[in-house]
Length: 49
Length: 236
Image (cartoon, rainbow over all chains, first blue to last red; front, side):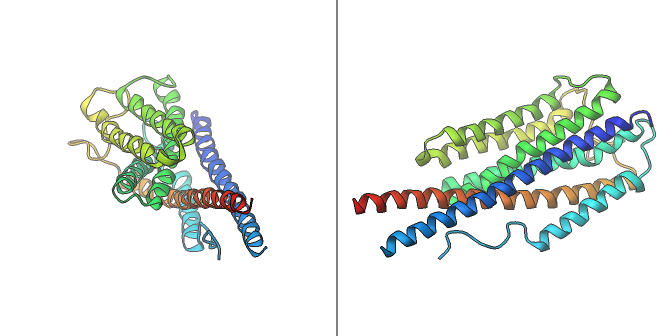
């Protein structure tokens, strides 16, 4: 039982890293989607003009 | 017409089983499987430490094979997959190393040692980190081809890591699976490791799908920006 804190920190650091990465790429995907949609709408608008 | 796929990058048919597998694996690791006889509770790190390494190896092969296919076919979709897999190598190999360090301190009494297994694993993180830096620094035209070469070099490190504790005397434990006579796992430990593997591979699949989507969006954005400039120049 004496090494439980190492077990806790091992999982805590490992999982935090994975989920931070997942969260970061999730946000990046949402931002890029919005940027591409905006740019595409702008292009369509310009094309109509 | 949309320049990107509007469906979620992580669909329910993948996200839900990944979540269920993760919860199931955590239950087995912390409740179902008994502590190992000599190391005690800290040995439970093994159930995600080994799957993280297996995922990093697989990602490295996926990235390398996609890079070879890109060099043959010059199709940007292979480059997207290669980038997604290679970035995941850095994350999962880093998780593998960090969890290994957390196990090493109470068991070995040291955080780190430069033995063949640990050094080759660290080298893999460095190679893929270099790949990511190069990805940002290389000129857009030749970027995919230059990065494909680094990706293939990175893949070549995997057999070296795998064989390191078979060919050399290392501080890292000898192989517990496929290590010859006397190696092997107790049934409960083997089943729990299997559950950890399933959970980690499903999570990795989610990560690669999402990262590949970003790579595609990046390409769409580059393409749209170039077309916008051309359109503005035409009008002037």
